[in-house]
Length: 387
Image (cartoon, rainbow, N blue to C red; front, side, top):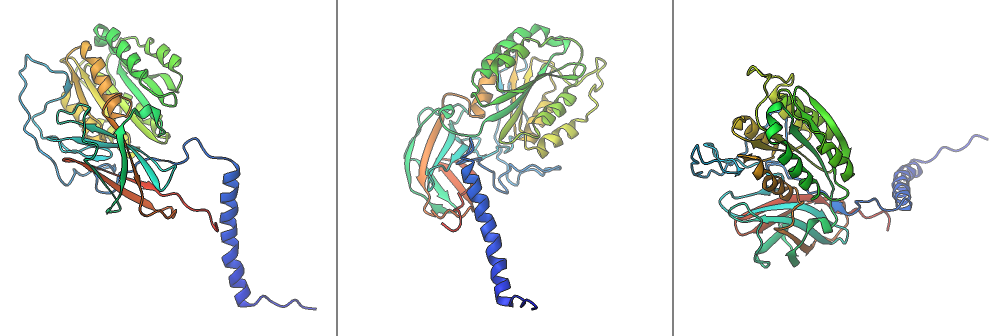
């Protein structure tokens, strides 16, 4: 006897049920595997238009905040952020700082106890130093433009809280002219590595005639130390090639990542010509595509400040200047603070999301404190069907 064909209504019902069952089984199996190491931790993502998204040919930010910078005498070098005849431009990953006011930076968002949300942030004062005293009642927060009840704000140490680990590459100039600085450089880098969390990873690249990967990415601090003391100055300076190698080592890493580049000179083959095969703009574009900020440190008086500023500005990093090796500890500490590995100026804020549905939607939060604003997005948890 010939079997009866399925009616149209039954066929539609089967087509509706099967995908839903498949999604449920997938979610159920993922629960059996247990939570991942970073479950509940959301990486703050910059929203479109905040100046953080990188493209191959980045346009300048729509609004620039100009400041009048004091002149520095030629015989009075000052360590720290470089003073330039150009106006400062906005290049922050998760913040919209006022250069004449406080600077607020969102470091991480923890949604483990959703709808209670924990936000880790950094506050700097008008001089760019960690803000040690803030008005804890002065923070205002909105989520998708709706004011949210903030019920806990206080100082904290980021390493004690859950969050995304860092992946870093240190690029160190090992040309012959670095011989007079190398002892200070090694000591400062070692102290910088001691600020890292146990789950952070770091790679070390030394560059002279060509870049050399001395220590591949590792969380083992003993291996980091061995690599630091293998730095041996000699030769010339292939700076752009080293930057490109640093980007290649980080491009496949997830989470937060950054490059710290230290040099006492410029890309030079000894005759004043460029030594690197990689053009500077190509190395910068590679960092932009991989969303890797590059912090540059110029050491001594023979540097190309304009080049180091260009690398930092166009990748969202920062340029710092050290007249001599004695300033390096402070500058590496400042970068550690920027990356959330300092000890001061960090605060936790907890609020309860009024939109408590676990719908998996992206939520945009805006935090305001005095004249500083920070913006980030996080994905809400997604409720398992059909429970």
